[in-house]
Image 1 (cartoon, rainbow, N blue to C red):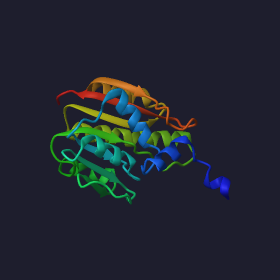
Image 2: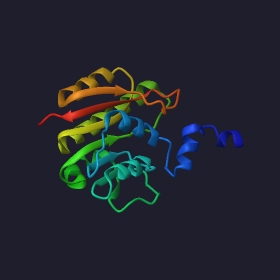
Image 3: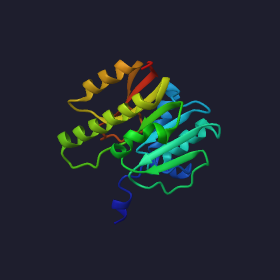
Image 4: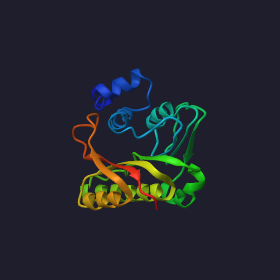
Length: 199
């Protein structure tokens, strides 16, 4: 029983617990931030797939109280968060038409750590991941200010290049990044759009 409990525990899990973050995934965003400076002080940030809340915690620290961070997820976020963070429980597909109203004006950053409920089928899981990424990109198109930044997690598959090409069309620069803190066996990778072009 003990072995099962500790199966996913590693250096980053223990580090997150020690530093009071909700999950080890915070260090993926921290690596991206260190390299590309995605989030700035007083930014307005939208975090898609925000549960359990570690990206919200980190984004809130970076924006400071002069910023605003909004998170959306199907699952609840149970941790205590600063006053300038708002969490909405809901389905991204249902909420997409209202996204401008939810996120507010002058959104500088859209983050997506969304992942599908995995089925065990690589083809199915990759296709579902691609759909979530396309939706996140569509949301970013809808609400990001010119010069804004976009980060999304994707599972590599047949649609990966097509998705990267979509990002290239909308941003001055597109980069692909694999954090050291990603689990060794994970197929996840992050696609980052820097400096959104004017619509």
